[in-house]
Image (cartoon, rainbow, N blue to C red; front, side):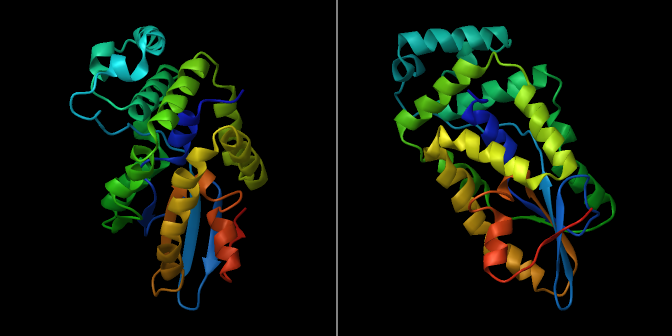
Length: 254
């Protein structure tokens, strides 16, 4: 089996997209030349902290999870140095993300070293504006709206596979550094085939929501850079495919 679906939530990036008039990053980058401007579309690999999201009032995490799942959660949390009490009021999807992120931090991943963080600091230092492609509510809405059974499925996958090594992470990073869009698409497709309920809110819906904004930038008057999670660019319903269908011609930079 592959990494848990929560790993791919983090790989796709909960902070959504960043637009900035700043230098391109060392990641897969495509360029779209408009009549009056140039748009750079870059894929990022980022790891970000999950936001708080609580269970409904009066709900108990132990009751929601059941004794067996709660015991597994407690054991995994203890291994990562996280008291189970700290999770007592959080929804299952939030717990899955927090466990995965904490596991990655144990592997040496640093949320502050993501592409977006570095670009934001660079843009601020250069006095260049930045803006998001979606609001916080939009970013998290798809996960918050998952039925309880799907949230528990996500948590189960995380608990099942939390012990696996970082092999697929290295594979994604290697494909990202090479700008290997077909390989990234294959990895995305493989993982979401095991959990199709996540594909619509995490990929398809967000890409459709961003598309008009990106196309407006591509036909605007100023050069700009748009950075999204690398896995948003590729595969079925990826931004590159959607842009080509609308008549744009993204060209990958060497």
